[in-house]
Amino acid sequence: MSDLRFDGKVAVITGAGAGLGRAYALLFASRGAKVVVNDLGGDPHGRGSAQKAADIVVNEIKQAGGSATADYNSVTDGEKIIQTAVKNYGRVDILVNNAGILRDRSLPKISEDDWDAIQNVHLKGSFKTTQAAFPIMKKQGYGRIIMTSSGSGLYGNFGQANYSAAKMGVVGLANTIAIEGGAKNVYCNVIVPTAASRLTKDVLPPELFQELKPELIAPVVAYLCHDSCSENGTIIESAAGWAGKSQIFRSKGGLIRKHITESASIENVRNKWSDITDMTTASPRNSLPAALADLTETMECLRNGTEKPTGPSREDDIF
Ligand code: NAI
Image (cartoon, rainbow, N blue to C red):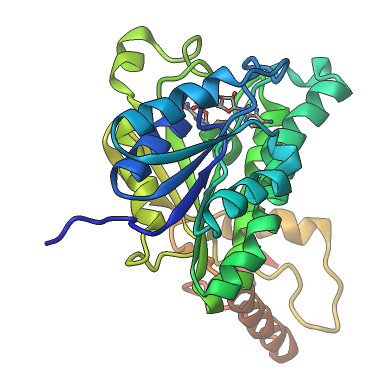
């Protein structure tokens, strides 16, 4: 099979001066894309700025024979980053929202400044940059957008409440962008990486740190951005040369009132708790219409006074 290439495509990678973003930029450029290497160049906590980070990666790309332009704006000025792409290359096809910082503190110690800084870079930055690129992508009938989440968002992590919230925020953002862009071939997916970088050097065990190269995740992001890939609205976790899909599952649940004319009670919630939380027959939830179809079925059961089909009916034992 032929190589997957990005000739003629323009890729904007935010936070591409280091770590994962740098690996993405180098791979896209090596496969023919023109790359906007965005990086504010501050410290890992989002303080300061420097042009060096983006410049070094641009030089690396150019020395390897590729095409790249540096952009030094913060993602909070996302429209300026997209302007750099349009001004230099006339279009934008791929946007990888990757820039990130950390302000780790346990919940009681998170200052408002720590909270705002994290939401601004991860969530608002992804929104601003994507909002600017989205109409261009829709108009040209092709676009690939990546949001960067984190295991800390999907699963939680002590000391990262601000970061976890922002990283789940971008999942919600991606879910809706996937719906709004899908019909126009503008797809939005989420990468959940684990890789060695300055953000993880103090949290990953040293022997693991050596192995978790950002270059092992870059092909996953690049594939999601290729025009031959029709994945949309999906969360992909990746690390160490592995990738897998993550999805939200919901239990079949249980009715906490017997009939539409009855009210729900705390006791019925207690009595049905094992049904509510039983994940052995859980199924994935992919869309709001699917969830609403379930609700219609629930209403029907309540009107008829029948139990939802959650396996053998045990309503007589429970109510
Ligand atoms: P990194 O610190 O090596 O790279 C992040 C880059 O973003 C830096 O070069 C930084 O200057 C740039 N940046 C920060 N704020 C910016 C802003 N306002 N505007 C433009 N550029 C800005 O970190 P790493 O690990 O490569 O992180 C990349 C992304 O992956 C981040 O969003 C991070 O939260 C996420 N992530 C990383 C994980 C890992 O294991 N390394 C795990 C889960 C998520």
